[in-house]
Length: 427
Image (cartoon, rainbow, N blue to C red; front, side):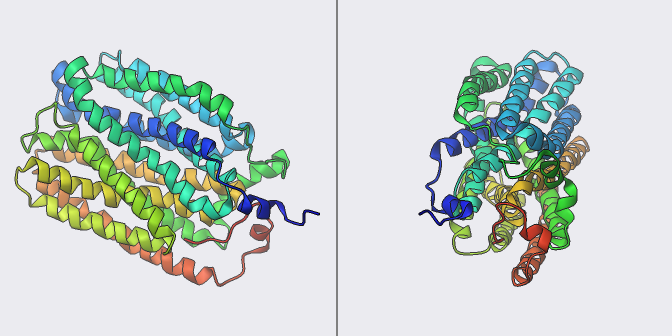
């Protein structure tokens, strides 16, 4: 006689590697498309005969579209299921990316990037939620980090391939190749992902809608942690997107050509992947908030170092790789915190809202960087200026860790305890 409960069976099950790989692949394409515009700006500006700072609106509205996608994804998943949301979102950003290649003005480019951002925003929370829901609960945090690492891998691929693509075929092909790759992945996503809905036969439609509500993120037992997590996400995303959007442009002030400047995105990507590995290994022994405090400190050290470096190209790329390690670890880690902070039925909304606050920061970051570049501010001053929000983020994540450690010793509220698939937080 089988006496194991469904959660116990899930914990005893082996990881679903196929679903994990598909979820990661969707996020890799998300990461590729997210940085595609930033690494193409030097070439587009030269081709169109405009200043790089004129693309600030396009960068900011891309992030605004992503933020709206994050906000909507919880309700969409509750209604349509994670597979349908993932596939639909990939279709949206595939079409947006393809049309971007044929844009002929900054206005057209800006509108298309906003639409593309809507698709990009919906993919990430749905993919993380789907992968964690169908895999053992004991692996939930590590799986969230693994899926989120796709963003870094996508940025790395774009950075490494971007130089060659722009030089050989022109900036348009950066977007065309991304769109073709997404199109190839679509049938695998449709047939390879189960139609996993938030209700998962455990809740009716009304209850599923309730669990996907933002109000669930402000239940008494998680309210303070939600606010700290949102603030941390906002600051870390803000700083990262200053560099993911403007690093190729900033590197030209160090003597990089427009063909070599995309290597800055590759350096951020490599550092980001190393940061993800640090998160996976660190989370097995330490609280995620402690690991995030360490990676935030690493980002501060490398940012200060980069501000005082000379024009040594290899050393600059190495240091900005360290910046990517610290910042991207924070961006990935905040989703892993959200995964363990909320019940499974609320995870998609939790990830989406935390990431949307981050994306609000990613709107502010490119604008801030664009204004400073437009004013002709020295690159070293820009780098030192963005150290301040990272220092604040470090303080916030330390506070989050202290509150979490205290509240894990306090019983959960009854309505949270009754939620399906609730796992004890280890944040």
